[in-house]
Length: 338
Image (cartoon, rainbow, N blue to C red):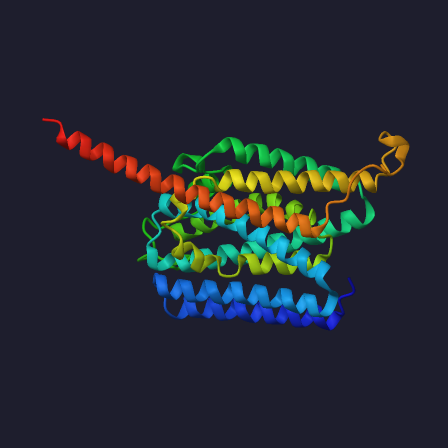
């Protein structure tokens, strides 16, 4: 995939302008977005991703467009799963709702920087060492098993790491939030951090962990740095509004972790087969490529991803509705007991 330098530049400038515009909106009027506002913005960002896929189709063909859509869907789904932890963090630190937008936007910016670094390192490693795919495959299968076993996300799943505990103990901190500011001065004019800095540390370190999961996953679908980067950016854009849009729906997506486990496990197997096909490790098949290793095309990958996520969503909503009806029936039964 030959991407001219000016296309890279135009893409970076365009996506950067969108993110800056988003930040300007939050800075100008901190507030909790309404359902209507969140729906409009999420629709706009999803529409931009779909249009970008058509841009890839027109310039580089259907194969690369399919890789972009598969990567974007996978990263977007992982981002939705990440929202579970964001909800827990913002609730645990009691961040006022009107200031949560700024925290989320800064967290998304941190995630973009971290993922950009991982993408650069991953692309360089893959171009020089094909055996890196074995490591990615093993990591994805491990992550899939862990996701499948964790079940529903609970508030106890988030634990403060060493960096958060250190910042609480060492940094001079105000007792209360000072709107959305990171620093504030006391009555003597001394500069203090606000609890918002601890929240951002929690979000940032969580983003780092998420990046370790998501980057190997998308490299299993495309090895093109341009598609890897843009799919990640489009998956993160609109995540702030999606947080407010489906905040109540997250509790109903009870099988999301299982669906993501299937997707990551499938991509892990796909990566392992590709590693076998390009094998040069001396202790596997004498350092020669494994001829029988089948190739899983992007069409099948896209079908598996879409199908799994659709089934997961429908099954989750059906189970949530059934559980709600069962709870109501049991409550009515208890009330009828004399």
